[in-house]
Length: 173
Image (cartoon, helix red, strand yellow):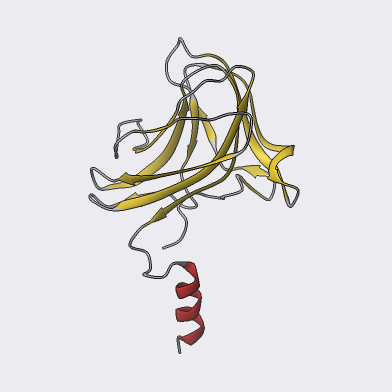
């Protein structure tokens, strides 16, 4: 099994891989925003402009390449980069949930988002088996939040990670 998110650089062939979580007010969700990426080699990122959070939770969701099938008790490593402007004072929260919005993992808070890119790491543990889960990040205040290189990876995929996977594929006969 590989990275659960549909694209760790947030777009696939220019198409957004994240969708909005409402009912808050999103002024703009720029899924292929050029000029704000983590570095010059990856100029595209996602920018979420949040105007109002009083109507409920607001954020982004990713359903993976062909869905996310969670197994109860399985742990998933989350790594993402984020930065913010225009008064965003967080926090961001992340969790796994079913298509109806019910929790499939604990909620983790990602605090300390600032105007500089910062890497955030967390572990999400599936609290139930769910064949059609999604990964959700929500915003705790108004402002602009940029996301880049979002990855959600099952811990028990391979003992040595991707490099080991590539070796096993090469050596397979």
